[in-house]
Length: 323
Image 1 (cartoon, rainbow, N blue to C red):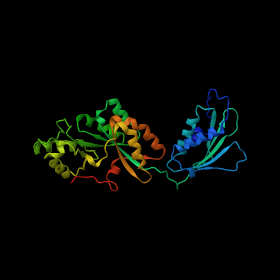
Image 2 (image 1 turned 180 degrees about the vertical axis):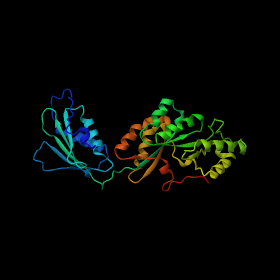
Image 3 (image 1 turned 135 degrees about the vertical axis):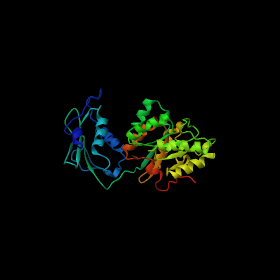
Image 4 (image 1 turned 120 degrees about the vertical axis):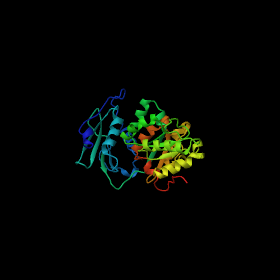
């Protein structure tokens, strides 16, 4: 149900060697505030209650935005104190309403900190929406492909057409993610190959195969730095896709993939520009995705939403399309 279902009336305590039952109320208070900070809560939402008769007790009223469940916050706090010499009790004050958290020393039953959590529908965390585009999924080993596709947050896979990439489509769609198809000079499969030396008839056969096979693709992307793009074949491709009302966009309309040498810094710079009400796209190679996974989970904690890139690509002032 709610918080009560996680730790209601249940104490969690594990000895920390060498502490000798030393009680540090300041440590408990700082650890509690550090945990709240991980969720992107503003200082004004965490109100310390003054005038307590018990000088050894910290009292707080904490307001949470509607998109941050109380049990998620309590789970974080419990995890922080799990290996320390303290015990935690939490319970719902009323169903669907306020939740109380209490922290005690293990050695005796004296409260060190009490916090009352409640939702406030009028507060919103300063976090925007991000869409992740992953290039080269088909290059990974099968076990790594499965691990990436099953990642809990949504993203778009950009596939170079081949029989191998076709086999990935059911898994991508089944995990409620989306994919796009990249047309470039690296297509080797004869069913899908496009080349400036091909006749119009041969090009149309490949285009028919592409359109008939990758029916769930949200976009087809043309590499505008490829030989294919600068050849006569591009006009045929463009016209044939237009006849079928298939969206064809240039690669330049999408962000460059994050630089492996400074991937975390580049990722964080994009995030810093994506505050409340903003959206942004991030492109990364499948091989480098693992590097930013911890960053993604941290951002989710502070309120960032990861959405399908297709929702961003044609929204607002984003200019896509071919002349």
